[in-house]
Structure formats: structure tokens, C-alpha cells
Image (cartoon, rainbow, N blue to C red; front, top):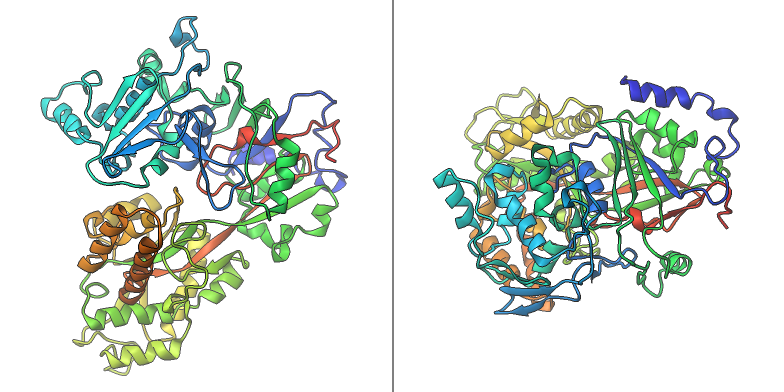
Length: 605
């Protein structure tokens, strides 16, 4: 156990005597409003162009600001201007977007500005986006920006690589230009009616001042400077992160628009509407990587909020999805949220055993799906914190239909056996294991990881497949190694999960799109009919015609089954009664400024 985990466990040793979760941490009235929480995984740094891990991005989301964002309480998701004056002016069939930004917004004070106030200008967004394309930045997320199709961006990057010269930030780019101090224009290669969704990700695509990057050089990961409600106050790597109120933050008032029937959202809005942001003075985050010390630290009153309750404590904390009575008596409440994610088992479509579109290969994949007891997985392993996935489109996304039912979640081992028999996957030598139609041995090679959750899932999967006569061999490796091998097409079968980052369900179908083979399409599935539908989706505006394409795409991917879809997961978050306004975001990470934590002397009433 690491030292920081040991300290948290030791501090929680006296938990049994506590009467209230804040008993050891109460503060006098008028004390600073502080949210205390913990991350289960260490951060890597805070430069938006260089980080890709979720916990670093949670921090950058509070420091940097995108042009647009999402309404905190609106469900379904609603895009709202943040830095932009309003929604974009769109021209040339959604290929040109012109955006005007609000004047009078300033970056947080920093030595890089040499004592001067630094106003945000449109060119700061140009610079920030170009940094993803600069080979010297080595951004792991360049492919995401590349997919936007900004005119001239690929050529600008190639020029720097071929000439082995510094990236050109100064020559105006046709597809990304600051027309003046407050006007930004994007020109795209292709029609993109939903391009604005890409501009909502503040933790990645917020404005960055060039002089800050040049001032700190190789130390830029340690010196995030943005226009957001917080700035980095203190940082002990892999141990503790402190965000503090940004004194230079402009006047912004709390506002949100929950649906009329959303009682919880309406109550939050009534309590907080019109208050100046951020509501908090400080956010203190400890890094506690082991589940038990993190859980005990929360119970001991060291933290106000524990996000993503560890699965091993769900039955203790939220049996049946409701806060346990012994916790409720201590002023703790739990919130369970169905997330926009999906788990899946992918088949390498170039593999000679499980891949291809031949009827017998399709039959094998469908039989594996029918033999998978998703219901038992949900009940026993996931503690009822999931629902079966019927299609690739996750809840809260465009194209999700809770009434859509498919074979994907059906558990029917008898039908699986009949399907295998029909297409020649039979036991020819009487040893109890099926062979391939040509008589060769049938052994599934499933990649996995050496952690307890993976082991539990593997055990259930092995029992399911053995019950229909399919032999399985598991190949354990660390997750990054499996990812590298999977993208290279070297794995036969592997289990993964994916979380949506935007409200449009088409992004999910990139996993089935031929040109994304080996990238988002890790299964290397290639079906011209699906590619045609995907391209049509991209060009069409939202509406009935586009939704009809979603239905066609769902039916195709269920029929060919390059992925055996698993579940959409619930997440449980627990907090003390002094946390006000919390609601788990759907796709965004910037929410610290929108919640309040009452000081210990204040009443939560």
C-alpha cells in the first residue's frame, strides 16, 4: 500500500465514534467554501494539448474555457455559449462557422504577462488549436482535431514534418483564422452540421495564451493559465491538487434551465440561480489510488464527495440504488446516474477464426453473444449497477431509443448451440469441444488484464462459453499493451468500454466505419452499406430522416456483430448534506464552479 493510502486508512481508523461526517472537519461560520474530494488515479499534468487522461482533464476543465459548453441541469444536453457571444453564424452548407467572442474577458494573472492584464482575443483560440497539430507538442489528441477537417491544417503539419522546421503559427490558415480581435472563422473540408459540439470541450480546446507557452517552455504542464473560474493553487504530483478561485474571473452568474418536470433540477436552480461564480473558494483533491482508504477517508469526514463509488462498497453504501439508512442518518446522500457509456467485446474482423462476413463466421459471433449471460453479469458482478445494451448508441445520445430491442442482450444457450450446429461448428472427435467447420480446433484467444474486475468477468465468460462447447484461452497483459496490439490488429478478441464525449450518437458508429479501421474502429469492420449510411448521417441535419438512418445502422451492426455489446453502467456518487447543486455531468468535466459546499457552521437547510 502506498504511503498516501496508508495515511488515509490510518486517519479513518476512528470512524466508529463519529456522529456526523464533518465532525472532524467542521469550520466556523464565514469560513471559505471548500470542496474536498479524491481521485483514484494520479494526474499527468495540465497542458490541454498534451494530456489525455480523464483526471488531468478534470483539472484543466476548471482552468480553461471553450467557446461553448453545456447547461448544467438540462436533460437532454443543451449547448450554451461560454466565451462566444452567441451561436455560430453558419454558411456554405455547414462548412463555414463564424464565431464572435465576448470582449472584456481576461486570463488569470501570471508572471508570463509581466504585470499587465491580458485580454482574451480570437487569436488565442487559433493558437490553442494549432498546438495540437504542431509535431513538437506531440499531442496524443491530434487525430481528434484532424477529424474536424480544418482546411489546410494537415498540410501545415506535413510542411513542418517534411522540412524539419518549427511549426508555422504565424501564416494565416484558410480553415482557421482570427478575422479580428473578437471574430473567429472555421472553414471545413466537408459538411459538418454538428461541428459546434467539438467546440464545447473546454478541458481540451480552451483558449491558451502564446506568451505563457513560450514563457514556461518544457514546464508548461505545471503552469496552466486560462480564463476559467479557478487557477492552480498548489500541486504535489500524484498526491494533492488544489484549485483556488481566480481573482481575475469576470462577472458570471449561476444559471441553468432544468426541464419543467425535473423536480430535483428545479430545486437546485431555485437555490443557486443568480449567484456569482464560482460558488466555491477552493477545491482540494487528494490522490488515493486504493479503494478502501478512499472510501474510509470519505466516511471519516476528510472528503465531502466521493465520485464513482468503488464496486466493492456499493451494497454497503447504496443497496438497491438508494442511500443506506446508516449513512442517511449521518447526512450523507447518494446519487445514482445512468451514464452514456457502453462495454463491449470486439472481434478482430481480419482474424481467420472469428472475423469476416461469411455466414459461418457471423453465426459464430452471434452464438457467442447468445451464450453470454449479461443478466448474471449485471446481478452478481456489477451489483445491479448497469442495464443491458441493445445497440451501440448509449443513453442520453441522439439516436438512443429505450424501446429498441435486439438479439444483442438475449441469453439463450440452447439457440447458440443450434446456431453453431447449423453452420458446422460441431464436436467431431467427441472430446466435448467444438471444432471449426473445416475440422481445425476452435479456441478463442481473449485478451484481458490482470486485475480483479477483469478476472471476475473472464471467469463468467469462460463458464458461458464452455456451456456451449467453446474452448477459451485468456491472454493477460497490461491495458496499454493490449490497446497497442489491438490497434495493430494482433488480438483476436478483447473486452473494452467507451464513454461518450458529445451528445450525438453518430460518434459511436465511427467504431464500425471502414475508414476508421485500426483507429476508433478497432474491430476493423468493413461494410460498404454501413459506410454509406455513416456518410449520410454526417451530412444530414438532425431530424426524422437522420434518425431513420440510425435505425438502419443499428440493425446492420446487430446482424453482423463485429462487437458483442455488453451494458450501459450506472455510477454512484455520495456526498455530505453540505454539498449543494451537484448533478453528474453527461459529457462535460467543468462543474466545480457550479456547486457549493456550506461551511461547517452553516445549516444545510
